[in-house]
Image (cartoon, rainbow, N blue to C red; front, side, top):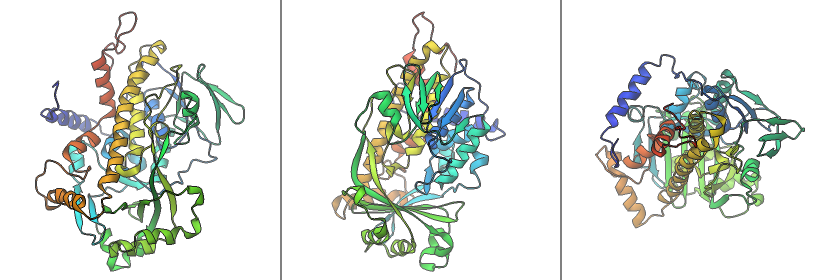
Length: 471
């Protein structure tokens, strides 16, 4: 393999992917079970926890997921994006039958100027992402995505226990204890319990929250598509599925249809430095509309159609260099390990990657004595990847939010070739920038772990390779 940055062998990668897809008649790849069977407990049945459980169950491990909520339902937010780097994994795992009737595949992403609404940047998704990255780019209602993961997990034999709040951990056994006093012992425990993670505190002894405010908050809302279709001033936005992002001074609005095209999802980001405890839900609608006064009349009209909204602080996770407990028997992943601002729409996707990477790393293990070595390689690969995505997400928050002036004009001019269909070598639009696009959406979490094991050529004390050729 080349020792330098190049894509000259991309054709071989494409050939491998096309051959693999052709042999996959049911939409999901068959997986072989790992040599070492592990009993694994997962705390948290969110998107990351369920994705991890699916990846591990496919490798033959026994998995129990504990969720503190009395019922499994994603109620936070509305729309979520499933970019190609996670869609590729999910489709390989067999999620398509549970997802296909709810997901929307947008044709492209249009960046619009805040004042007039004219297109200043554009990323073509169909057919480009399927052809280039071997997977689609979906948008979907968060609850529908969550349910699809849940159904797939059940079909693979994952045990999911609701109303099961984890109260404590013993990282040396390892075991976890529920609020009702029940204790469960395992070979490995995974904390996928979100930004307010108890596992992070217990496994890594973090007393302080690793979350940092960004000076922004976001209103989340949906608009009934039927209402928009009745108004010719805004109905044109629904003619073809697509993402539209209005960007301006310290603010942006991300929109797209979800629920099989029946609901119009909106995320409205704005400056906010006050304490969330002081926010008043009763004035949220009025406050939201004030933030976007004077913006594109089409956008303003859609905002006027919103009849309820929720406001959320936009937080970013401080970078953690450790995910594994000192015992080597417990670890964190997903938002518990790498919360990030939503400006690359990659938070859930990186959690899906975590699950895939962990399952692939454990697949290398020859005996339970080698577990820590495999986890260390997983940790190294995933800390680097997630940290870089945190950086990319924060950078978008700067690129999008220029006030009118020299930087804004230069940004818009640099995106002009992609709007006009001309060739370009770089772009401020990270969905289109060739280098960023390949890094973000062309990334394969399974392959990255394979390559890390090959590169490090990890050896056991007795001289035998950890992988011993097992791929």
